[in-house]
Amino acid sequence: MPLTQLAKQRGASRIIATAGSPLNRERARHLGADPVLDHTDIERPGLMRDMLNDNMIDVVFESIGVDTVPGSWTR
Image (cartoon, rainbow, N blue to C red; front, side):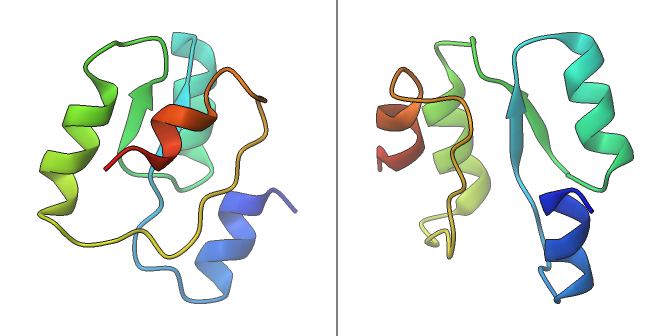
């Protein structure tokens, strides 16, 4: 079971996903992520801050690697 679906099954109220291609973004939406952002978009950290309204993220799962980690943690 994909992590997105497992998180939904375990009660996650919102799953924010990132993906680099339109196909992968659509896959993430299909699996239950909402919203889904383009991880290559340089505005992504700001978009995430705006979406969160100063709330914190409970869990970050990083499957891409070191290149995207800083943007996952930036506040």
